[in-house]
Length: 163
Image 1 (cartoon, rainbow, N blue to C red):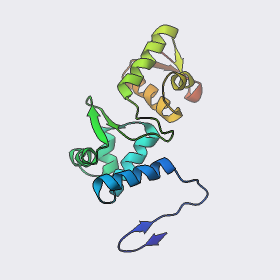
Image 2: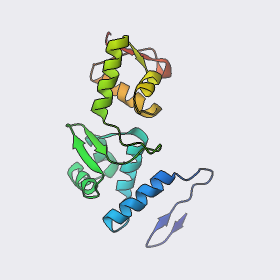
Image 3: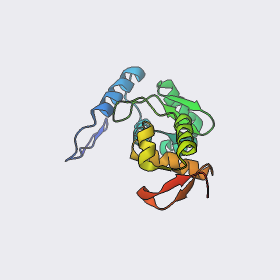
Image 4: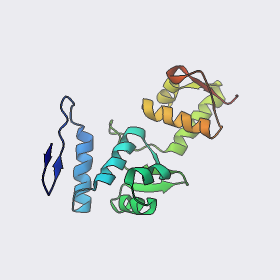
């Protein structure tokens, strides 16, 4: 680790560089005319990994009032609120695909369950642009909303409309 008054540089060995994230950083730097804040980078990384962040999570990650954090992300041109719960970010995922619209994906999952009676995490991944963590999160959210019920545990769980 290199630390000066002007910067902190962390180096993590044994991991390939995430070039899409590096490109995002450079693009943000160009848009803002300065380096993105650490809080912005933490939020964007979380969004890249999960596909979405609730407004409550934004508050926790940014460690400042949600309105201020959201305004900073909007000013950078990477954020928009859709509905009351999710912050959708115009940041490509690790695979370079566009951001995920949670409400649309959840509707696709519910439509699949209507047609087939059940869905697994793997099937959710196959039916939408979700990675494993995103599929898990979307399914968990549908369970919390009581739109789906989980039967089984972990990766082998099956989700249905019936308890």
